[in-house]
Length: 366
Length: 102
Length: 167
Image 1: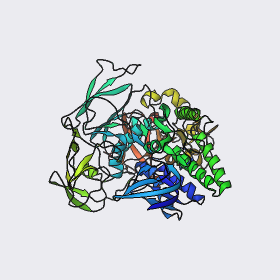
Image 2 (image 1 turned 45 degrees about the horizontal axis):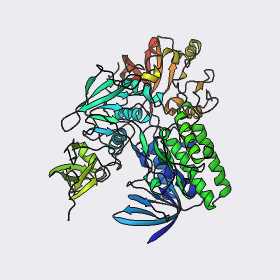
Image 3 (image 1 turned 180 degrees about the vertical axis):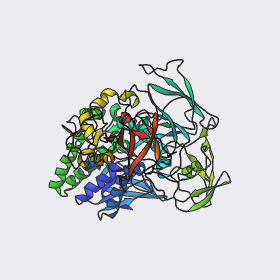
Image 4 (image 1 turned 180 degrees about the horizontal axis):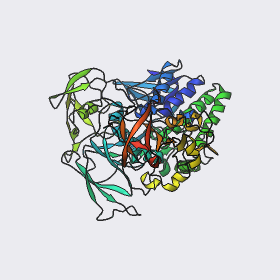
């Protein structure tokens, strides 16, 4: 049996929830498919306060933003959330298949918003597969969702926002954070995150990397070394540091498999951290009716993911003829918000990436 | 070790249950994933790789990768990072691809 | 250097410190926020409209020292925990420094805590004169420490735990 759906949102994270909020708010009927047993995506472990402006709930902690959105969507008469449901495919005839409780489900949506998020990247070095070498997000899940002390003594690799934030959150969980090493010459994340870590006594070592890990059956330590300006290890700078956990915060990559499968025009865009669907100013991919919002179309802050979700949700509402005048205004407001969020120096990379997307599409940048 | 107190969070762990890891009893809670319960018990080695027999631990903890595959109640390739603990569950380290039960 | 190790330089700080005259008058907010990021809750949090951001949300905050009354609402509002309130107006040689705090245990009023500077180095033991919760949703504590005036621009954190009971 194939179930007809008006708007199918794949992924119940910040982008998906805000997409549903927008589309349903305009009057559309929305079904959210979430593979986890609770919606919220990675907001469920973001114990820090978000940046941005009031429209992106700045100043509120990520977990509470997630709870608020989930509660609102759970109680919305036009929205249904199916958890423990993994989407398996988007087919040529527009049918979407999913797995829930060992059951194979089929949906025929009028519109699809893909908001599948991202996965953590890995780093190459000898013995990088030892148990105890974890993604920084994984450690955040273990401690902030699982309530488990993830490590006794940890080294963080990567001084982007995830590396800095998770290091701070590990301090809050009573973990000894030995240092943050960053291969780049400069700290990549927000400097206020770096400063609060530093004044808690955690050194941030730019121009350093992990040369290798060691341990018998599990991680017992790592060898760190300095890098020259060409990112090559400088001989003689190696130091051995004991630790039971190494966290990798070396970036995310879009989880865009469904877009590939649906036949969307995909491009590798370095600044967006991987292969992304080429979208238009409404965040619609090259396949009519399939939209992409959030990290799946380029790695960015959760604040931007929420605004992208809202943009896609209202754009879908317009295309379905719901509350067209207001929804169109909201689309334009979301576009303006994104321009503002991305207009500072920290937005340079994403602006460059989106310019490339626009070029591939042959149109103006959103 | 589990976090007893946290400046921001409160943990609703659910009911205390017992499952087994390689036949040994391990305590867990119904709202915990198998990976979290094992980690809390100090168990990080979850299986061995197929060709070189190298120890495997978790990596992503959100069901993206396949690093934490274990055999649970005889079923191989279970992502223990997204599978909740149940009373009496039999969790076994997985060797390579694991063996699919008849 | 801030972008290399997370420690703001004297030059960074010089740009945000109020004049000695203003500091001597009473408590005032110091925004140790030196990077152009899209963030503005401090502007909205200030009931005196003393914090501005021009031309847009990507600018760094500017405190108008004449409007600021040192009420500390911005301390708990800042998502980057980058705002501090310093009071140099007391007649004796002690200043009051208010810092944001998000760890357990929270020290109690009257206890002595080990103060840390921006590099996390120990600066001595100081009395907590006030510990105010940010509330149920905000959850950031504001700790006010009594420090020698010469350390008022140094102490920006405390060591977690090991607090001593004051006299």
